[in-house]
Length: 154
Length: 83
Image 1 (tube, rainbow over the protein chains, first blue to last red):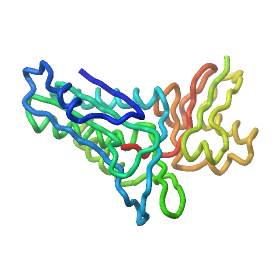
Image 2 (cartoon, chains in turn blue, brown):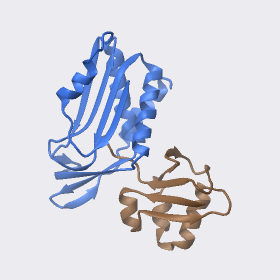
Image 3 (tube, one colour):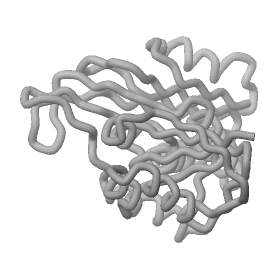
Image 4 (cartoon, helix red, strand yellow):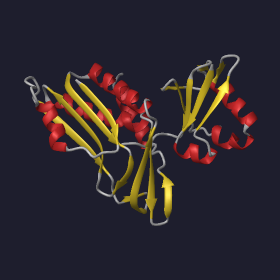
């Protein structure tokens, strides 16, 4: 059971967790990851984020990543929610929720989904700082994280 | 049939353009499409020839050799920074 959404609205972690549990009799583990807006980046004070996405493709790219995760691990439910639009400091940006019979599959799959999301899903961040606004630069480290998974076999 | 070309994020701002439509008489690859765009918009050259530029055809990430045909949706954008 997969659920993917790109939305401006916030998400409620308790409600999302409930969706992972409802009627799930074979899941032994649920991993929930949330990404937040932090108040610093590359030496600057960040005041606010604005996120843009490619409608249609962002959702498809997420589903393709989930499919890749399912080929690697035995997973039950997966929910990914990514917010777009203007977000204030400490707001939730992204949720990745994965359930599985055993914790190691759920932990690995959640990390895998985030690492691929960071390099393949067409979403971009612009940050407002005290010195003006700027597009967030791609961090080459994200490619290394993905390459590690690829080295472990795709 | 028209081919739709979309630009996102910083690239959209640098080009001052979110979307254009082209009438393609023949299929051509992404590299050739970029050359065609630069011919008609010379100021776009430095932005469309960036080594970091990403491209999608029909909402799938592709490389420069991928063929584009009439009716396709093509998108160009900078490296993604979501999450």
